[in-house]
Structures are given as structure tokens and as C-alpha cells.
Image 1 (cartoon, rainbow over the protein chains, first blue to last red):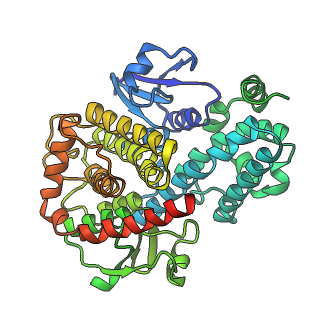
Image 2 (image 1 turned 90 degrees about the vertical axis):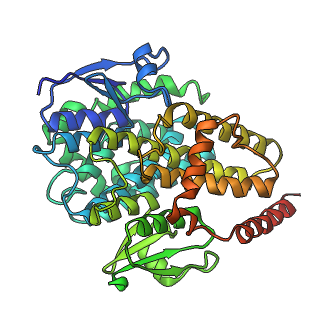
Amino acid sequence: MAEEVVLLDFWPSMFGVRVRIVLVEKGIEYEYREEDLRNKSSLLLQMNPVHKQIPVLIQNGKPVCESSIIVQYIDEVWHDKAPLLPSDPYQRAQARFWVDFIDKKLYNPSRRIWSTKGEELEAAKKEFIEVLKVLEEQLKDKPFFGGETFGYVDVCLIGYYCWFYAYETFGNFSIEAECPQIIAWAKRCTQKESVSKSLPDGKKVFGFVQELRKKFVVD
Amino acid sequence: MSEEVKLHGAWASPLSYRVIWALKLKGIAYEYVEEDLSNKSALLLHYNPIHKKIPVLVHTGKPICESMIIIEYIEEMWPHTPLLPTDPYDRAISRFWIKFVEDKALPILGRMFNTMGGELEKAIKESLEILEIVEEHGLEDNKYFNGETIGMVDIAFGSILYWLGVNEEVLGVKLLEPHKFPRLHEWFQSFQEVPVIKENLPDRDNVVAFFKRRRETLEATAA
């Protein structure tokens, strides 16, 4: 299929990472375009007028927005390679439930870990760990959330891993000490080419967050 | 077999009705279990330990939670009378609007109801902005979001607008004005005329009275 696929993204975004991973999993050729979120391109504003956010997948000029929706879209169109969602409807509902859980519960406390201090930071850490512990329990002794193979839930969670170093440094805690199975799972994911190619380096993300944090916290 | 499908819901909840509408549109027999949200059943907590909320659909003993995820499950198990388009791109657009309703419109409904004074004014302003976005970007020239027949986006948004109407009565405000939101208003009128929707709504007086009482309690404790 001679299709033009463009991804509007921002390198540290844990949501953009989801799409990058899936594009590699499916072997899809695409053009990556880095967006400066302080100076958004007219293309981004045109392609995502409602949210004005990345990631946006553009296929033959038509935009798909929202990372979890983009992932499902790619999985449906390029369905013959590396399926991400289970084929059984009940399992699919469970996968959607957990991605919805991640989207609703993880982002907010994770953001507060690097953008607050004192009591607020401690509360954010506690909430963050609680969410990871629920996910850890869900994982149990499976290699991936998808079971034997890397799937939709794994794709949607792994993007947070490159931010862990930043959370640990600003939060002064060890995620591995609290949730060892999550770290073991994350390391297993990074063995996959699609993940190692798509996940930015944790120290680089830390540097980015360090700069960003200055706007929120006076140390 | 009706015992195969059970819905745990609450009579005054918009999310409960979404699932009822989907089941009725597809003609799926089910058993309805009313949950008292101030005294949740052990069964509900067992079926939804993470969020402890309704609605929960139980199919052959297996629970599915979150209203729009439940409806997508129903859509896949019972594909007749489709509620989503078949084309992957059109499905992605539908999912985008469902997510918009869930992330932006639904929380604002709660915020409007639960706040007073300056916070309430802010919530009303945000609600109007959300209506403007849907008016401008969401509705194309089709009769419904799903085309000629209602689908998941209509169900998602329709439930919010109906309960927005309840909020408007309780709070004495008017947001969905026809001259401000002509397309949305027309769509909503058509939506409410769909027989399955019309026949499956809570008693208006009861639901307004219910929320009025709750609002009065809120205002009394805030004062």
C-alpha cells in the first residue's frame, strides 16, 4: 500500500511513544515530525483543532487523534501483522478497561510528582504507587499484560517507563523497591526492538523534566 | 436466555441508561438489577472491585465495567443493528468523540452539579465551550453522529445532554439554547424521538426531584 503516513509527535511524550512502538511492530514506514509544543505548527492545529495536542497520525492527509485511538486504528487497518488487541471480545473489553484505567489514574499523580513538592509530592507518590500496585496485581505472573505476547495494555503503559528515572529522582524513591514486577515487566518490554527503538533515554527525559519543573517548583 | 445477560444499574444514572439503550436497540434480553449507590451490593463490589461503580454488565457470569466499554463489547458480541461504523477511519472518528464525551463532557456535568458561586460559573462557562466544540466540529451534515441511525456517539452524548437538561432545571440555568447551538439542538430533538430512547428514560419529575433534593443538601452543607 503506497500510503503516506506522518506522525506529529514530541519526543518525551509517553503518549507519542505508544504510536511509535506500534508503527515499528507493524513494520509501517512513516515520516516522524517533531512538534515544538510552545510553538505548534499550523499543520498540528489544522489536524487536531479540538485538542491541539500530539500525537496525531496523518494517513493520506486524514488525521487520527488520541494515542489509544490511533493504536486501535493502526491495529485494525494493519491487522495481519503483530495483532495488539485480543481476538476474543471479552478479553478485548478487559484490555480496553485497563488502558482506560491507566489513562484515568496514572497520568495525574505522575505529573504531580515532578511538578510539586512537600506534602503534595508525598501524596502524589502514594497515589502513583497505589496505581502501579493495582497494575502489578493484574499482571500477576504473566510475562505481559497481553499474556504471552506484548499487547495493547503493554503498549499503552510502557511509555511511562522512560519517565521513571525522573519520578524517582524528584520523588526520592525507588519504583523497583515498591513494584518489582512492574520493573521486571518493563525490562522485558525493552527487549523488544519496537520498544527499544521508540523509548527515549530516561536520563534525557529527566533533563527535559528538570527544565520544565522550574516553571512549577522553586527549589 | 435472559439470565445470561444482567445489568447492574441505578435508575437516576445517565451511564446506566446508555447500556439499557444499547441492549434495547439490539433487542437483547437482559435482567436488570437496581443498585442502591449508598449501599452497594456485595455482588457489585465483587464484579467491579477497581471502581466499585455501576453500570456493570454480567454476561454468562463474567463482568464488564465502564459504560462505553460495555457497549463496545455488546457491539462485538451482537453485531446486528450496528452502533459503530465498519470503516476503521470512521470508527476512529467515533472513538475520538466518545473519548471527548468521557474526558470533557461527563466530568463537567458532575462539576456543575457539585459546585456553587464562582466555581459553578466556571463550570457553566466550560460546559458552553464543550457544546461549542461539538456544534462546530462534531456534527457534520448527518442526522445523527452515527449517520442515518443512532450509534455509540449519539448514546454517549445523548445521555449527557439529557442529564444536562436535568441540571439546568435543578440549577435554574439554560445552556443548550437553540439559537446558540442549532445543530446540536436539532440532533438532540431527533435523538429523543427515537422510540428506544423515548421509551427508556427515567420519569422526568422523579429524576429532577431526586437531584433537587441532593442539591439542596449540598447547598445546606456548603453554607
